[in-house]
Length: 163
Image 1 (cartoon, helix red, strand yellow):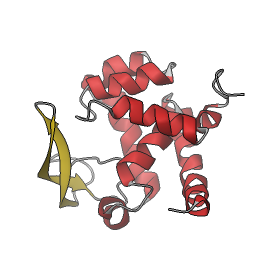
Image 2: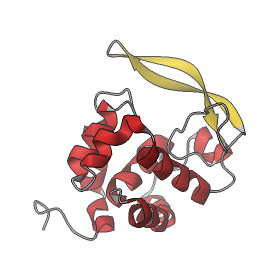
Image 3: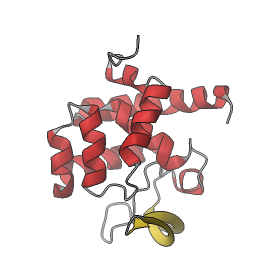
Image 4: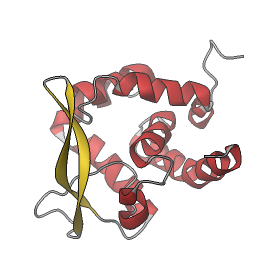
């Protein structure tokens, strides 16, 4: 992926991440990093075919009734394994970003993450501990993306260690 493509992707998702952050009090930097990681910079089949940038799985009876099956990697007993799963299909990226934020703020399982949402590093760590991702390296991957692409600027500040 070229630097120009990365910039275009970030320009596309930054307003959506900021809007979710403002409405739901979630760090925009983490939202953007999740979108990058989960959608492979918008190039995954799930992102292209389903407008699903966060790997949001289908839940029977949910308000987004359309879903598709894709193969995903889950860490089972610490080892990556390819498994099929049903993922929600969204009509727009806005719907996807809204649903992502709704899930984080309304599902009880993410309560520990929301309690530390004012600390993006702890928030990212808690997302993994709460079961958002089974990859034990998930928080470090998010932090790496935040630092590499200065995503902390989306939160309205630059991390102190970066000048």
